[in-house]
Image (tube, rainbow, N blue to C red; front, side, top):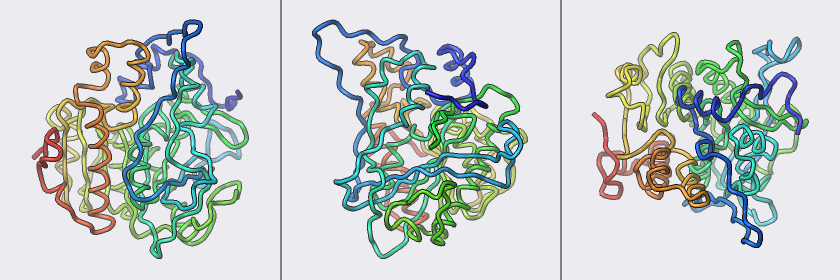
Length: 405
């Protein structure tokens, strides 16, 4: 495993990583709080792979990775002649997927680094697979796909909300997830493995994430125009070029990525609707300016009642605005950890109290359904003009969900 020469894991112990992640409102890495995994006793059956819930949409899902280089932003950390470099993954409704392999939750090198930093290397063989088929052809529908770009949390990775991402793709969206360089774990095509960098000068603030999102919108526009934005010009899946609709683009993000989504939506009118999954909305300088486009907040630990920054951002929303909260939800409840931690808890013999201290008291299966249903309803309403009733107010289908005034 080769890490990039300008990114290091120095001092990234499990304890320091978890503490920094919690302080920043970041993703709690899979099993980061559990201690070393138990070794299997001789003769015991092999442990089964962790799983993610399948998407509920009518279409199979395809996926492809891109290496993107923003030549408008020099990369001082990488050195002279280098520019901001991002890995991104496009998820989309596909056809004829049987011949194409399913994608892993994380690239192999990034996964090893991620779990090693969390003190959990024994879980590497158990990492989940996704429902996305690598390189599968794009489904033919006769109409361009709406697009959603996704921003991950601090010290996390672009696959940390695969449940939501592949759910949208299975319902006809193209979703582009971004690996924010210097604050993520990812693999580059040349063999480099990037990990979070502990450098106060690194471009890892919410504003940097927002700039990444806006650059990815540029790349989506290239795809829409029939141009391949991949820096290495690798072949794209059949039907992807020209298949996305640059007039119907939305953005969403979790934690720091939710703050970045708010920042990018304020700054870029190409984002027709924004969704924050428990974003702190903490920036310096603060988020300012009125927003006349739709924005939705799914709150947990950073609810407006206890978070002045979120309350201030809410006060500037002039368009359609929604703020929902699921009873018993924790910060990780709107993401893959809600499905993965209960499986890890069974492997390690956690008590119910230990598990709830991480994922909250919201039933994990219900949490999964909530994170599948509400983002889809929001983007359907504002990118497809398909208005249902789920966002009208409290629903008997989801009694845990409260609409905050």
